[in-house]
Length: 158
Image (cartoon, rainbow, N blue to C red; front, side, top):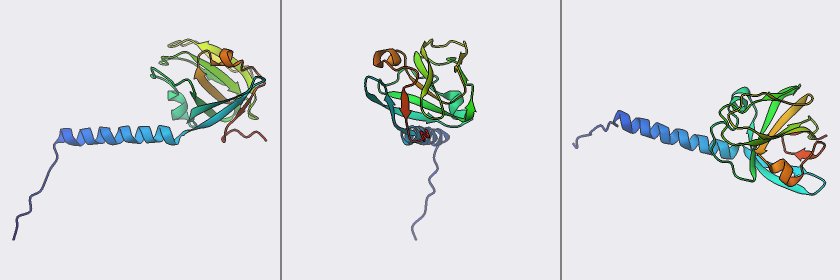
């Protein structure tokens, strides 16, 4: 009868495998949680691929510690209810335009080029349900203004 040998992995190999699995999970989650968002302005319609931040943990991390974001990318935050919203840029490495969005998808106000690493509080001008973060300068370049319409599957525009 042949001998059966047991194979055991080294602790380092197990750690490396766990790190690899975690990275695969994170990358697949980011892909799964991204979707298309449309901004309609007087000048036209613009499409962005956005990641979603739908719970407290995701909202707390946001776009922190990212050194780059593609020109057509962003993050859409949804809050649990309509309320005044405050954001900041601590641990955020890239300048961002922040769009504070009413429950119906219209832009209430925009904060242009939020300063990286700043702990200054950036507030909505009124109660909102969503915040969209895009690369700094996008609002000016595309002439996006308060009152413009944001369309996305999680935004109830009815």
